[in-house]
Every structure is written in structure tokens, then in C-alpha cells.
Length: 286
Length: 352
Image 1 (tube, each protein chain N blue to C red):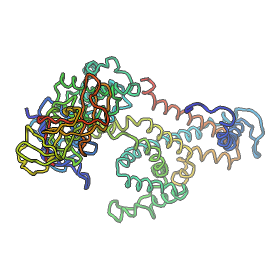
Image 2: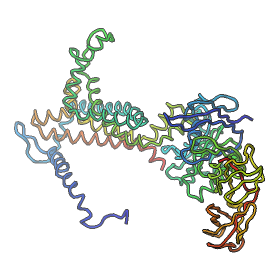
Image 3: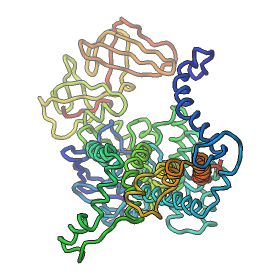
Image 4: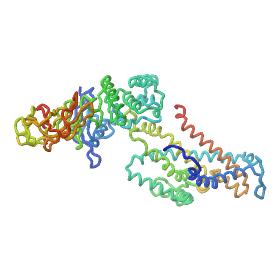
């Protein structure tokens, strides 16, 4: 019968392989990292097994706090920028003819074929004073003299959004293309202006998709490691940079592990909070 | 009362003509049906009236005022969509009062109006429900209530009943008709279901696959005297018999001569014509009879469904269907000789 749950070992065989892969490549390494975060560090050496909270206590520094906050802020801001540009953009794409939609999507997806390194260095060049776009603007007479737009926070944010934007569109495209075109039309016949229709009906009915896209870009950006070093100043370095520094350059594996675990915990809490806010209205109504 | 006037309306999508040559005057307070097969442009015509499409040519006037260029959100029309288009993220009450909220009407008035409208569609007390918690018939009513919230100047419905099952659909047809009569709001319903159109409307506008209007009139007028063969065939079932005009009031069909009580003007002898006779006007009698308005033949099939009997006659190659509601068993059986009698008043002559 349809809908009946498969029974017996044979029926579960198909999930064994993915489960195994997940365990080997995800759960085991994560477990190792969680364990290491409680181990004792041997200065000049590696670490010895044990259980202590020293590594977590050592996190309590101004640098860690500031970097954690900055990382979260950067991720949140990137997500906000990507979604607020990506949503109307995707909406207009889905209202286009099929052929035009394909062209736009292929164009966007082609950005994904570039590696983060190439994108980072390309933008650092394009935003520089000596060889960047500002020279073109000077030539066009838009600005007086060439300016350096990098390194800096704006350049970093720009680079991250450039990378995350195609993913935002990818996440938003399916729900937006499934949106019943009669919904905005109904709002129009009820007297809502096109702008009001967009915000109350299109945005409103796709709340969940917007939250999903926001969370996706947020998580995607949290791991930013390369771009902050290319496009940002040292004070724009994210926690990933700090963790790598602790793990590789200071050979303090337990501290790096503790940082990563703590970071993950905070991010997870924020994601759950965001999803709850996103669903809040619905939960109350039912 | 001027009502709604459409002048020379034409709509093209690229090279495709969706609606052409539409001239209509719809009086105030009437229930009008746009009836036609799918792809005849009836929905496009409704969308033109709603302002969701712009006509390629022509003018739309409401009470003498030209509204051709008025955008949809400034027309104050209520529309019910085929998909209903209820806002999934809002409650029933919020859906109904959306138009009032847009017009910045205060919350108490809004709630009051929502309750009034819910009473009107017999769904009192469902204001806080979510759309996903409603049944198909309930959604239908909510969509109507939402469209009626601002007391629209025109109430437009685009096949809203097509998704309902047969029983519920018939109930809703009656209900919708009574609702419209109570509110006396000018209503336009688009449908491909001729039964639906006949049940509900004061006026039926029949559109054909050539994207033009073929006939406009009361349901009975259209049924009794269809303007052309398309209308005769599309509205109900009809026996369409090809023949030749043979006199001022006679048509010859095969070997039989038909007397016609009402011959349209401009049809001269020897003109090719089509005679339309409704199945329920055809009388079938056992045995072969010759004579005026009589076609002898053989019974090829009898469909007896209890409430009505359909008798299919083969009269020397001419197929005739008769429908009746006999008290007892039908008088003829398959294979019998029988005669179809076509009364002069039942024969409608159409140009071929």
C-alpha cells in the first residue's frame, strides 16, 4: 500500500550508505573536535587527553568577543543585503518569459564556476586605486580622481554578497516561480497598489522562503575565511580566520576546537531563533 | 442606467488574437455570463474589464466614464479568480478585510464588516481560521466575501466553481444567484458550462472559438432561437439538419419537406440552410409515416436513464435524437420502424 512505512532490515538498506558517509565524514570528525575542545594543551607540543574547561574559559577575551560579534554581524548583514536584492530580482525573473528566465539563471550560475580565490583577487583588483573601476569612472568624468575602495568593510561585504547572491536566487527561485500569479492580481483588484501588493502579498505569502534564504546566506557567510583576508583589513577578519590562526600558527588545537564549537553553538541558536521569528505568526494562528 | 459598455474591444498577445470585435452593453444590476468553449477569449475579456490586461484597441466605459486606462487597483471591482487566490498567509478575516485595510478603514469597522460578510456567505465565526483549514466550498465563499467587501461596482467571477464537485457546484450556483439578487450588484461570470450559465444569468454572452461574440440574450432566447449553428450546437444539444430553402416557409431536407413557422429574413429559395431542432421537441412515433415535417427511419439506439429517454433515429442517413420524459416504457425499441415529427414551431432556420 502507498504511504505505508517500509518494514524490515531490507527496506532500510538504501539509507545505510548515506548514513555511513554522514557518520564517517561528518559526525566522527565533529565528535573528535568536540572532544579535543576539552583536552589539555601542551605548550610547544600538541595536546593530551583529559577533561577541562580551560579552553572555553580562555575564550573570554576581548578579541574573541569582538571577532565573534563581527562575524555574526557580517553574516547577518550579507544575508540581509542578498535577500533584499535577491528577492525582488528573482521575482522579476520569474515573471519573465521562459527563455529569458533560462538566460538569467545560466548567467547567475556561471558565477558559481569561479573559485572564491579568483573572485576575491579579481575584486581586489577592480576596487583598487591603481587599476580599479574608479579609473574608468574618472575617464567617464563621474569622479575627480581614482579612489581605493579596498581594503575595507564595504569591499568585503560586496565580495561576500557577490558570492552568495547566486545561491540566494537559487533558493528563492522555486517558491517564487510556484507563486500563483493570481495572488498579486487579486490584491490589485482589491485596491492595493503594485508596490503594496508586492510587500503584503508576494513577500507576505513567501515569508518562509525568505527566512530560508536568509538563514542559508547567513550560514554560508559565517564560514567566510578567504575574502576577509583579501578584501578586508585585519579588524575585518572573521572568526574563521582566528580559528585557523589558533589551530595552525599557534598550534593550539584545543583552543581552536573550543572556538569552533562555541561559534557553532551561537550560530545554531541564532538560526533557530530566526526560524522561530519567521514562523511565529503561523504558530500563533494555528 | 448605462452599466458597462465595451466598444470595439480587441486584444492581441503578439500575433495571437485573444478577443476581437467585442461590442457589448451590459445593463446595471444584471447577472451576465460569458459562455464559450475553452480558448474562446472569455477569460481575457473578463481580465480586460478588471483592468488586469490592457486592450489592444477599443474602449471600456462604466456609467459613461472611460475607464480603459484606469489601473486595476483603482477600478473598485471585486473579482473571484479561478484559483480563488486567497492569501495563504492571512486568516479568513484578514483575507476578507484586505481591501478595507488597503483603504485605511479602522479596525472596528473592518471587523464589523468581516462579520457581516461571513454572515452573508453563511460562514459566521470562521474569522480566525487559516485558509488551509477550510474546505473547497468554504474557500469559495470566502473568495466571494473578499471580493464583495468594498461593495464593488462590478462583481467579476472567472470560473470559480469549476474546481468543485458536481453536487456542491449546483448548490453554489443557486447560492451565488441568490446572493447577487439580494445585493443587486452587476455580475459577470465566465464559464464553459452552459448549464451553469442557464441556471444563473439574466443575460448570456456566447463566445465562439473564433474569439468573437456570437450571440447575446436571455438564456431562453439563446436556447430557443440560436443565432447560428455554433450557438445551436454549443448550447444544449441540437439536431442540426442540412437542407435547402424551398419556399417562403418551407425547407427540404433529403426527401422530406419541413414547414417552418418562422423563416428569418433574407433567406430565398435555393439557399442552403441548417435547421436546428431541440431533441425534446422531436416527437417519435412507431411506424413509418410520410408527410410534411415527418422523417421516417429506424431506431438505432435507445438510452433509457429512467428520468428521461433518448431515442436515436437513423432517417435515411440523417441522424435525429429525440429526448422525452415518458410516463411508461418508451413506445419504440432498437431496430423498430419509427417516425420523427418535427413541429413547425420547433424548427429554427440558420444560415449554413
